[in-house]
Image (cartoon, rainbow, N blue to C red; front, side, top):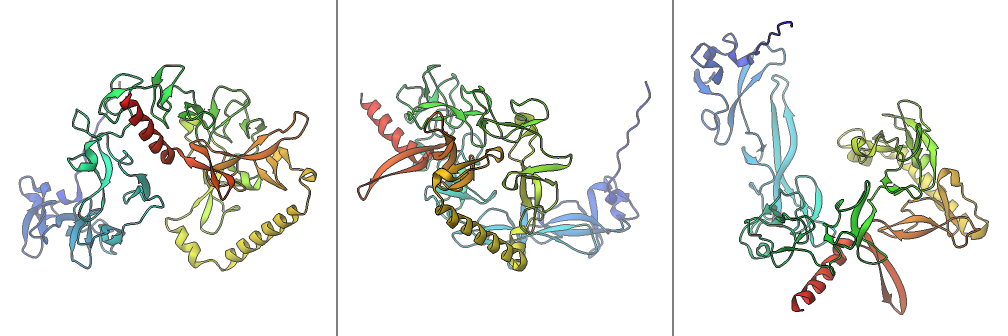
Length: 467
């Protein structure tokens, strides 16, 4: 067996030619500070640096010189207005309703150092009044749910600055979620429960009741909604629109091919034979693209990865990162992704030619739409090979959201056995159809489970407690 030799490469500040302090015992742990010509421990916070800043090494861009600089510690940024460092995503020096956030990194032309800058930013609000904007990822989460928090904590807001925070303390709104282990868990989740098929209930116990929508009759167990639960590959356990009871259905973004027991992502191989991709619920098609290309459904064409293709300015054809190859298989679905971090801003400034093209396309779509209105529904013929289906007097992609209300998509159905498929709008997985009377008219809408589940559980659980 051949011998393998390894060596540890010393950092630049261990070189006595660059750092005079390196000649001392443990000299690689200290830096030379030119103003007073003394040696100070590396990454020391405070003097000789200003309060809150740490002493850091930085080499010149050619690597021949070493500098000692004062920088903000990790997780902090420098406020130019205040002249000091503050922890990111905290109130910092900001007024109520604002937080101290990152403004990006500053690089100089002399050294390799990077200084993160920050300033006060307004906390965004969410469309749903019961949701909280999480400033670290820019997403909205329901208040008093786990959201982005670690296990045992729930999302709420600080009492003073009204900043989003993950907590489990003695404040009134969190008491009902505290379990015996001292942590906080969302009701009707696994929480601290050890026994399979039980959930953390509002009375602080672990259990399962048949009146809950979380109840699965076939297994006589309860499962958390929105999880795999007792379901097969590609399915989630959710409230079924037909019965308002818990059951398995394809998770969002997945479809079921014919009577296949599993659900798959469109434009992956799924249950299809080799060199074919799943196109819709009834069709497997030969893989249409060459190597290095992705299929763009809206154009029914293939485009090179990294090219602009049909995308607006500042965006390029890229992989569908919502599809996970290790779970869903390789996806041939192409999506438009930002070419740079600030492509939205670039589009807002650079819109002359592209805006005219977009307006032209919109006018063309409106013209087609008006023409379609004049055509009898029965005479409209749609290209089923391209995954189109007739809806009213127009042709639309199967499972598209365009002609339907929010929370619904277009699914195929037959009125009679000998007729062609037509499209109807049905609630997407995760949404439930609810009907109501508005001005003596029956109207329906697709509501998210979260909004209707709270009232349902509150009513039923209260009733059960009295029984």
